Amino acid sequence: MSAVETVDPQAGAQQELPFAMVYGQAVTEMPLDLYIPPDALEVFLEAFEGPLDLLLYLIRKQNINILDIPVAEITRQYMGYVELMQSVRLELAAEYLVMAAMLAEIKSRMLLPRAETVEDEEDDPRAELIRRLQEYERFKAAAEGIDGLSRVGRDVIVPKLDAPEARARKLLPDVALEEILMSMAEVLRRGDMFESHQVSREALSTRERMSDVLERLKGGGFVPFIELFTAEEGKLGVVVTFMAILELVKESLIELVQNEPFAAIHVRARAE
Image (cartoon, rainbow, N blue to C red; front, side, top):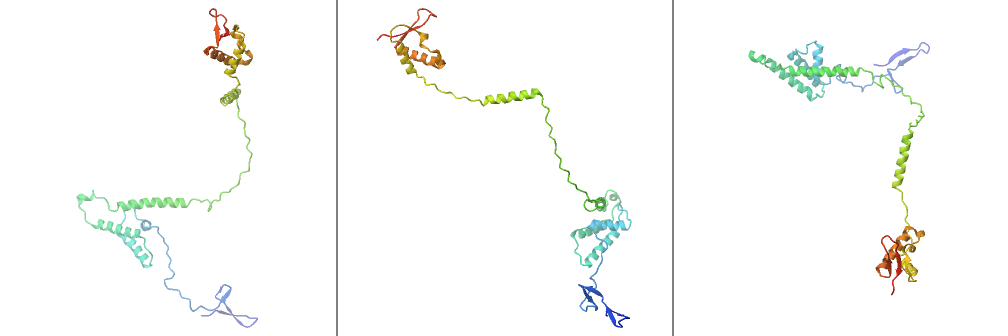
């Protein structure tokens, strides 16, 4: 077989039309090394997701009532499909073979004779298969319904628009005067808790004050007790002078004289 020949009336020469253009090159002759095996092209029109899907297909194809399945006929068609898949060298899933064994078991149980007294009490061997088929049919219908819905990105495009940048106005809280006063009092109370002061120590000595008292009593006469204290020295001076007087009395260096209760107290130095 060669390419088609055409005649150019103007040039008077024959031209060959190519069979095809491959990578820009004209092919005018059939390649001799092209071989297509007889079973290279096969078309599968039906694809099943599992044994239950296959059984449901066989039942619906023949308009069979799912509650009254002819097990013998369905088993024969099911095994025919399994043999077809084996003949085309497809790897069968284990669940297909398990379903085949289950159909064979149901078929054998349907063929076994049963006593009339036990027939009503014994369950239908097809009950479990019917239940599984009905459940699978419901889930398949639900999946097909969901698949028919519009999908975002495939059927529906959701527009996106960035919101304009807005400045939010911060509203000031509505505070009553009583709340402000209570807050201020709380702040002052906390300030008092952390308040501190430094105590300075005054340089006053009891021994020195004892010497001062003895110096004032050198004359040997009585001196009023209150004249030994100086108000300008404050509380600390009064305490130090009083302690000095007590120490002098303890050491029997001075004596205190009071003529009657609540009368004035006088102080004088003791004679050696």
